[in-house]
Image (cartoon, rainbow, N blue to C red; front, side):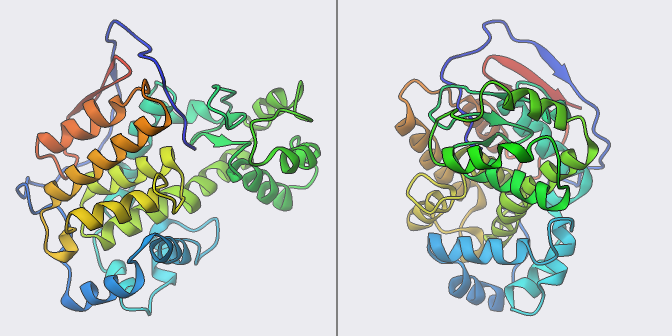
Length: 327
């Protein structure tokens, strides 16, 4: 998670295309992309997910209800019975629909790996100098941020004797640091080799969904956000991590709610997302004043300014000087 780009990587734009087969809905207008929520749901929202800690507990509770192999929709169904969960289960899938989820991974990959072919990143691994050790895999799991360690621990429990298992003592020792002690020189090669195995690819998918995608989409639905807002939350979760501090995802959401009413609270979806992106961009700059913020400025902000709250195709955006297009 939290892969940073500090410099503009390309001076000359390149057009990248990918085919996505999905029939987009009619434009419902700038204020109508989010789900229609009941008053009971609004009340449950206030009880369950106000504040960073409460929101994190609520989002992660149901996201794991069916286990690592369940889909977002299945996990939501398994968590029914607590008011807000019942309402969520009856909402459209939004970004969790297969075609929309594919688009979400392409959008993230354009910023994380400078490609729309997100599956090519299973074997990715490097230290990008951001103080979080090795960054690896489809979502930027890091040796310094616990998510990579958890991934390898869970994978090893299901598949003992895999090519990464011998590195678990070293991964535990360097967790929370940028150290490579015990990992060099063999860990990058071991990661790349294991990434060729379908079981490890599925493990990466499951960890991505459980930690990042499912909680972000569920919480966005709780806040009354449509597909664009759900993606805005997901990308922020990936980059900033699922933390409750002021610059973690849940902290960013809490700060936004102090300034702007969510659609669930009767506010404008566009105005709410505008505030969230402003706060998120400022948080990115606190990490490094020279950090590249185009994943917000010329991608998500572009869709928002166009009023494309449903992420209707075709889509065109720019990240790090490269132009991407999904027809």
